[in-house]
Length: 381
Ligand SMILES: CSC[C@@H](O)[C@@H](O)C(=O)COP(=O)(O)O
Image 1: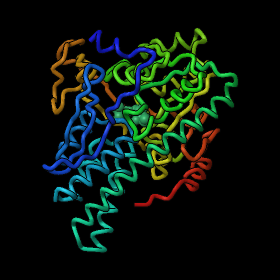
Image 2: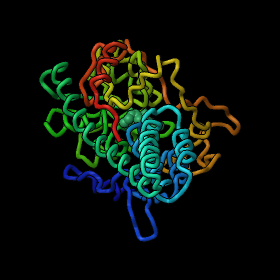
Image 3: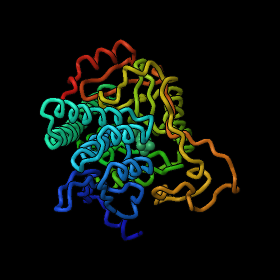
C-alpha cells in the first residue's frame, strides 16, 4: 500500500481509468465501471453485461455521485435495450436503485424516453436501442461540458467573494472526476483554483461511515498534485475556530425548488459552522440536480444505509458487493442499532450560493432557482 501512494507525487497525473464507459467487445456491449469500492487500494474495473448488475453496482456504491449516477442510469437503459431486455422494467429498477440523487432518475428517464419515441416512430427495436444509447452518450458529454462551466463559474465566484486567491477550501464527500463525465462539481472548482495557483489547501472531509473523502477525494487530490489535508468530520469545528477555512465547497444530490440542498450526511453541520464563522458555503451542481418538482427539503427522500456501515469497519472495500452484513471489523457491540442516513438537508438560508453551469444564484431563493432552470438548456434526446 505504501508504494501505491508513493507514486502520487507532485508530478502525478489524474487517473487514466474513466469512472464509466460504454464498450462493444465481440461478446456484446457492456458498461465498464471503475469500482469505487476498491479505491484507493486498487483500480479494478467492473464489467456490467446487464442492467441488474448495474443496479447492484449503484446500490453498493461501486458507481456513485449524483451526475455519474445519471450517466450510469442512462447507459443501463441502453444496455437493456441493446441486449433485448424489457426496457421499462430495467428503467424502473435502475431509477429506484437509490432514492436521493435526482440525476439517477433524470438520466434513466431521458434514455427511456428516447427509446420509446424511436420505437413509436420506427417500430424497430434496434433503432430504438440506438436512440437510447445516443441519449446516454449525449448526457455523458453534456455532463463533462457542464463540469467545465461550473469550474469556471465557481472560480469566478471565489474571486468575487475572496479576492486575492490563496484559498483554503473545505470540501465534503467526493465530487471529482469519479462522479462525472468531466472533472466533477465542487472538486472541479478546487482543481481550477489549483491550476491557476490560487489553492492554498484543500481540506478533505467525510471520513466515516463510507470514507468517500478519505478514499476518493484524497485519491483524486493526490493524483492531481493538490495540496490537501484529510480531517475527520468532527475535527471541522476546531478547524473553523482556528480560522483555517476560507470557503466550503460541496456538491448536491438533489436541490429542492426552495433551494434546500441534499448532500452527503455531514454537509448540514458544515453549513451551520460556516454561518457561525462567517465563511461562504457554496454548493456546486449542474442544473439537472435542481428538482423543481420537489418543493422543499422535507419532501426529499433521504436514503438510509445499512447499520453495518457504522458498526463495522469495512474499508477499503465498502461495502462488499451484494453483502447484507458487512463482514468487517466490529467497532460497536454486536447488535448495536445505527442511525445511518446517507444524506442530510441544508436549508437555503445557510447556502451562500448555488453555482451551476448556467450561472450562480445568491441569495438562494425559489424565484432565482426557477429563473435559472428556465434559462438552462431544454432536455433533448
Ligand atoms: C458530485 S455530486 C455530489 C454528491 O453526489 C456527493 O457529494 C455525494 O454526496 C455522493 O454521495 P454518494 O452516497 O457517495 O453517492
